[in-house]
Image: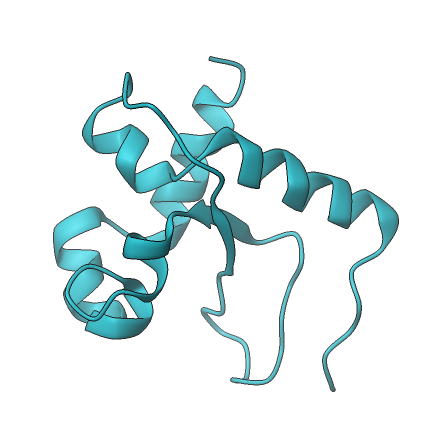
Amino acid sequence: MGKKRANKEQRLDMDRKARWGCVVCRKIDFNVITTPAQIHHIRHGLGLGQRDHSQIIPLCQAHHLDSKYGIHGMGVKAWTKIYGTEHELLENYEKNKDE
């Protein structure tokens, strides 16, 4: 199964989450001034090339790609020890998205 392009509803969800801001920054300090986030696909249980467009979290540049703080830089295990699981952060977003 290859990468499937997100449909219109999924693209709107991605945009909404990106505008909400980084779920990690908000977890640390909910009153933080947010900047647009990048979309991170949760890939737990999927092959490396596969994406589930319904399982996404918004992350700032630092928490997404930075070598010291980012999930792709630190690796999932180290990142999870500090910030929690990707699914916990998705639940946190769902609980607080209207704030």
